[in-house]
Image (cartoon, rainbow, N blue to C red; front, side, top):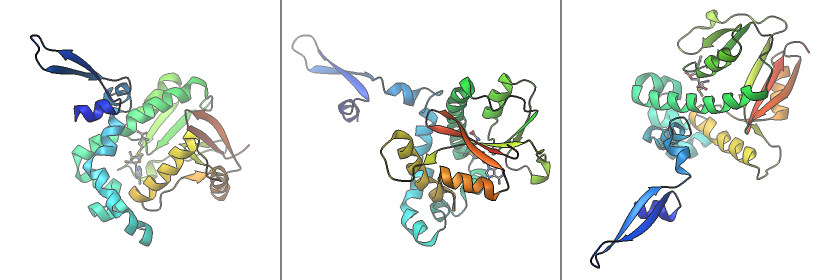
Length: 239
Ligand SMILES: C[S@@+](CC[C@H](N)C(=O)[O-])C[C@H]1O[C@@H](n2cnc3c(N)ncnc32)[C@H](O)[C@@H]1O
């Protein structure tokens, strides 16, 4: 295993001759790329999530899910992803850690220059998970009242938006035509993950986001910011 990892530049390897014409000893260490996988503040939790058996078992059902439109995750585990998370606390922690770590990295970048939170008095994070995103935003905008909306809260607890309210979405954007940029490759990868894990889930092109916004009654839509490859999209009630 160590040899395989070293041959793929994931580990470094130094050779050392043991005294008295003894055999060659190999000393392995972490190569630079490991900083992304071993640091709990980096992609380590996401790697553990993607490699988890609960996650990988799902892919064996992808073909059937494509054929009948149901989610591959439900076929593998008998429940939707979010129902299942309630039943398996171990995997639930793996999932939440991966989500919140990824959000920490991208929201930190987003808060460097995106100013769409200026002037807001209330912010609802829909599907806010373990509240990491909201905590980071409120740490910068201390006057915002934050509401973390996630299961098992019921819809009646959600506040009404006023006419100047806006809906801020962080998502990847699909390109209309195939291309090889990093952001398009991530978006098209996720476009397979979404229906596999959440039946009916999908990524969208900018035009499809705009149609979604208009169809839901928002007056306008814009791509407001880019945090790495993740786009910050604003659906505005009034221009
Ligand atoms: C992809 S995770 C993102 C979590 C969080 N935003 C983060 O970045 O860490 C999606 C979240 O949506 C929540 N969720 C799923 N279905 C929901 C529903 N019907 N109502 C409220 N929250 C829901 C899940 O519990 C989960 O925390």
